[in-house]
Image 1 (cartoon, chains in turn brown, green):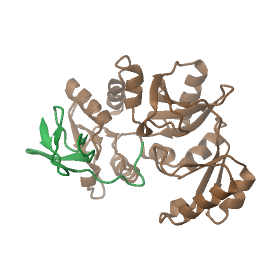
Image 2: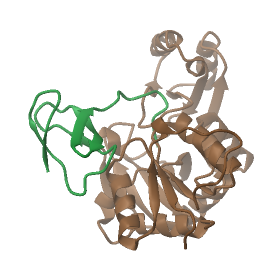
Image 3: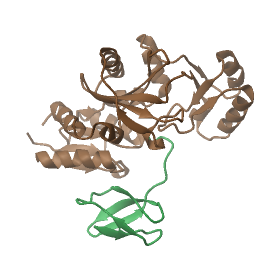
Length: 284
Length: 55
């Protein structure tokens, strides 16, 4: 070790970031906390860090910060390409379908005006989601044409051009839970169920966390999915239908893991695994 | 460490070590707060959620 310090990109230091920073402190690894709100780079950028861990909550700031850091030769975890792929639901779906990985039936319509007919062709119930965003924000289940019309009218009033793109997905009839799998490099660290009677089973929405046993099928699918996205530190979200078939829903590039800790306690050391992975990428 | 909520003046406890950009919630008014300086420790209301925030 070091020449250069590591850096952790984060504008909000939440539970997860505090645990990671505490692990770096514990190991005596030199690092800087980079708040993206103060990030300035003059081109051409020069390498100042041995490696950078992205824990930024704003996808836009994280993506561009990583582009700049990578241009300077700095290893980033995750890479900008992984962030771009995971951060856009359509790009994720295209990659999953290209590789033949199981995922709910998906369609895209490039304007709200054409969406009603497309939704009726697609069939009800259908889930409509924004291309970018997390925690189930602005996602809606549509069960009939009247609701479709109402949701599309609301979307048409939103200012972002991305909200005029309609991403549709089949609603899988699942038990009241989904599965978050944490992948670190080529290893599945563990998995947990996110249980909620709400169809959106996000921990940020109050879902309950329970340990999920690792089956060969779950491990294989999660690793194949993580590889498809470009690898790194990833939270793979899976759902199971009533017959137990697994589907990939999405992949998170800056995964929250407080739900994992609630399910597994300190039996699995997530911050330790993250720091191990980061150190393995570092170019001192 | 106890601080005062800038919204309601309620007491907000921060665990040591306090970190810059750390997020805390006021137990009285539920405001989401951010640590904006360490010496001295100062809390401000955290930024509103943005469209591209997420995992």
